[in-house]
Image (cartoon, rainbow, N blue to C red; front, side, top):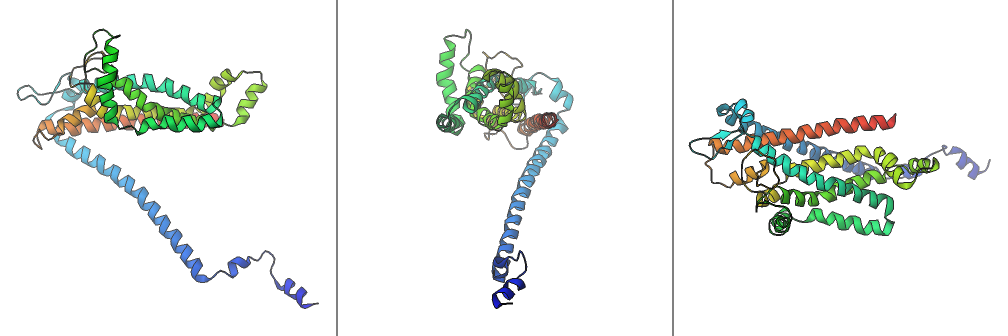
Length: 322
């Protein structure tokens, strides 16, 4: 046996020489770096949980002082909201809820169809070059400050709509609702387009093989397959519309009356919080504490909506796997 043969026979099969020749201090340094990164990521996750818990604790603590003075039957059973009145304070929250739901519904009526149509076009019809240009351009709408949208609704959209909508007030729910829908379109289109684009091509080819045209394939195969992602996009859009502040604070008005006429001015829950938190109210007063009660209700509404969407997405994903 030659020396070279002996050397090759003595070498274990599958031996990783890069591992054996790697200095021990480099291995230790790499292990420490991985542990540090793991701890940092865990700390970031824990921080988000702690912040969320802190927000909930503050809302519950401050709102509990309010509900010691105002019963739940008054809060949910009355239809008048006049917390700033000195003589006749009424704390029926439904006028704020109706204003919030009205503007959010108008925004969704604009954002959902246009956002979904834009997502279908970008995913199924646009060529790669057009998609690379249009998608970032559409997402630029999300970068415009909301206060700019608010003044645009007040100074441009409202005067324009007054030419066509009789009885439209200077402050109304229609104008900020439409502008809010325009602002939310990028959120719906971007997330929906990602979900539609992720549908396997095998499903499209199978539909084409059965003789289906492109449009029926999109609406009967592709969109149902991507519906879990589309539903998530819609839920985020609704949450965004309900939580929007500056557009409705500038263009919707401050009338706290129960009604669903989009031509009249109204006040949403977020706009009320902004108006009452300017510092004009003494801290600890009942009107000041009503801010936290409204904020807690808004948080619970958003939480319930997200939970429903989560369960819906799970059912749809389970159905698609079957």
